[in-house]
Length: 230
Image 1 (cartoon, rainbow, N blue to C red):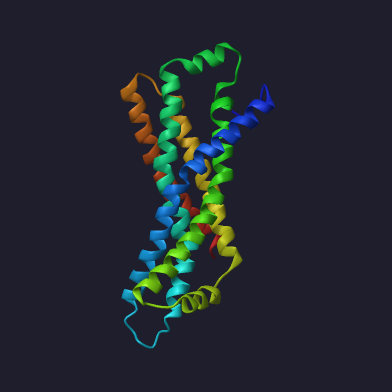
Image 2 (spheres, one colour; image 1 turned 45 degrees about the vertical axis):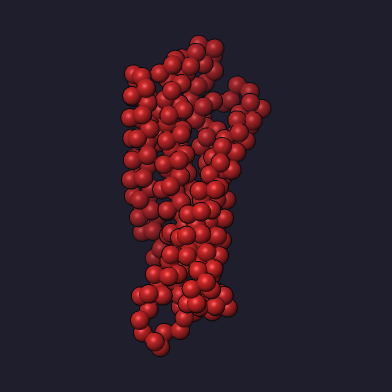
């Protein structure tokens, strides 16, 4: 897959095409999920704070930290494993069973590099950007839910969010998503590339891609937390 490209311009063009498909195409679902993650976390955190002497600004602290550290990167990646992973596996799997990949090999084109590498690069570039957007929208959703429900004001929320904010938490979140992007695209591409049979096998490969990607995301999440959060 990492063999020298035949024509660099073609690969660069494909990277931008995949960035549009993976990144821009996934923005609506990421935005919707992120807003409701922040809103629901705010409401549930307020429900659990039954002690009156705890300041309401703690809700902003809990929501922002949990959103940036875990909820946005992990839940977003699990959702994208279903959207992006299934698409990658079914696209490459269909090309495999219809012998389009064999045709590329006959023409002297490195099929794995031409089909897979641009997807991996595009995902590793776009997932961190989507994660940043997700974090912002989640915090905005938490602020909006707090205002609409009368739980706390925007000033109280931001006071708690700023109190324990750490740049390392943002870096760790982006690092996790960067890793998840490679996991999703590489596993999905592998499942599609080695599909054998027909339409039923393409569907099975797509299902395996999503399941394996989700499991490996959770495993990688634990490993990264164990290594870096000490």
